[in-house]
Amino acid sequence: MTAAVLYKENQEMVILRNVDKSVLEQIKAQCGNDRCICKIDDKEVDYGAVSHVIWMDRADIGD
Image 1 (tube, rainbow, N blue to C red):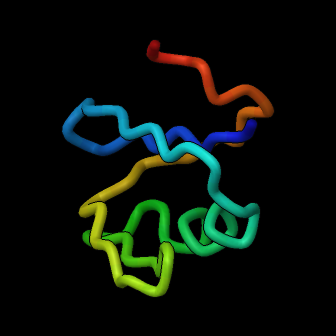
Image 2: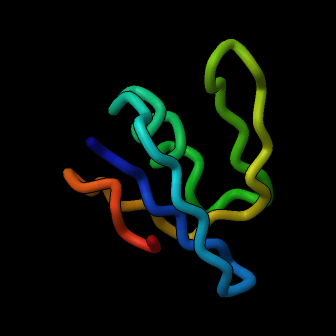
């Protein structure tokens, strides 16, 4: 299982489980902007301001 971990500018952390690396690349390209918008499961999702994102090969973090 895989996960992307988003670190938001307001110090929150968002964990996206079972996402494709293409989603990670979409988010990476928008880091530092006021809004980070990407498509997940054919839906547009706005994560707000994201400072950086990392890829995890394990998705059991935060459990």
